[in-house]
Length: 83
Image 1: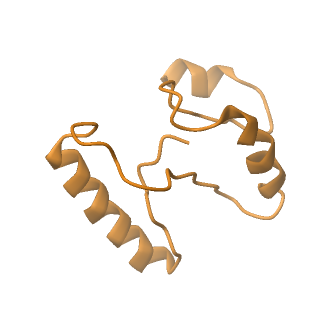
Image 2: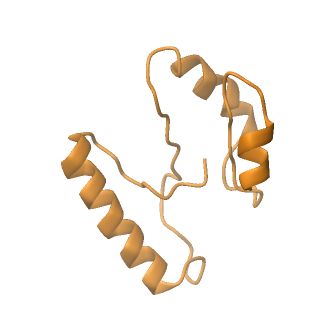
C-alpha cells in the first residue's frame, strides 16, 4: 500500500473495497465532489450483515467515527468506510 501512495502521480487517489460492497461507477461522482471538498467518504446504507465485521472492529469504528464527528463537526456516519 505504501508503495502505491508514493508511486502514483495523479490529482486524485481513489480506494475502494474489492468485495463489491460499493459501486465503482460512483467514483466519477466522488471525483467531481473533490472540486468542492477535501475528503469524500462513502458508506453502505442499511445494515452490516451478521459476521461481516468482528465486534471489536464495529466498536472501534463507532468510537473513531464519534471522535471524528466531534473534532470536525461533520455528520460522519462511517469513518472506516471502504470507499
